[in-house]
Amino acid sequence: MNLDPKQTEAFRAVIDTGSFEQAASRLHLTPPAVSQRVRALESALGNALIVRSRPCRATRVGQQLLQYLRRATLLEQDFIADLAEEQGTPLTIMLALNADTLGTWFFPALSDVLIRERVLLDLTVEDQDHTYALLETGMAIGCISTEPKPMRGCFAEPLGVMRYRLVASADFRKRWFPDGMSRDTARNAPVLAYTRKDMLQSSFLLSHFGLPDGAYPCHYVPGTEPHFHAIRRGLGYGMMPELLLGDVLASGKVVDLAADHPVDVALYWHAWKVQSPRMEYLSKQIVTAARGMLGVGA
Image (cartoon, rainbow, N blue to C red; front, side, top):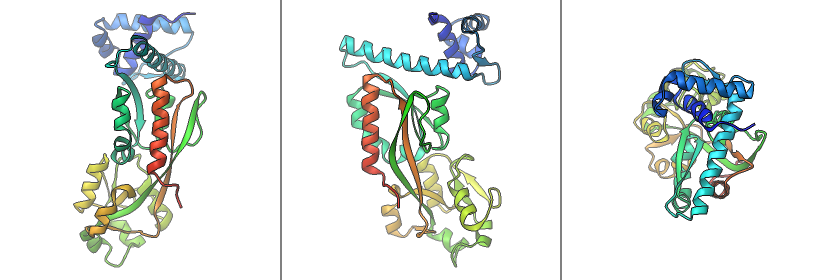
């Protein structure tokens, strides 16, 4: 059975935009025409591909199809570029990365490679515990995750360990923890997390002080730099990558609240076993760069 390109294009547009109406606008069609193409594809495959919700999302079979289509497009783009020998032809890759990877080692280590290999990035920033799901659903073709086990058809390479320190401004510590952290003081001091998916702070407080999530006030500030800026300004305390802390800790303006208890997070690179040449090369560079900059833990 051959997949109809107009039908698969309609399917991808619905998943990418989240609705039949927006997909129709992107494809310059009417919503009924998009719906007709998707239903024809579902009929040909004998399975529902889209959950008609708001936003629309792929079913399990739809996710498998989306994975295939993303990979096929990448292979086709790379093949055409190599065949034409057009040095200016870029390759777009969709990656799912955690904010701290982007805020520390990713661009310093890989910018030259991305420029040389003419790679355009389509990045989704997500908590490291949740990037794997984006690869699984076909929304990314590679991800950095805490999950060590590869998905079927993929490989997982250990990258190293991102070490975190629980830090605050010197003024914040003086105000909230003048005699050090305790269960009682931690109940009242505001925490800074990236998002509600960020479990670094909550896991630490549960492990060391028996405080469950919600037992203390918490800010949610996404993005490595805004998050760190909020900590430096004294809004709260939270986990930060050790890679960013050297000079700031030395200045004394930011202090380590738990110097004897760093938190190590092991990271893994996941991608498909069958890759385009440039994606295969980029995968190797990501692994090499990460291992050169991340630690191996205690």
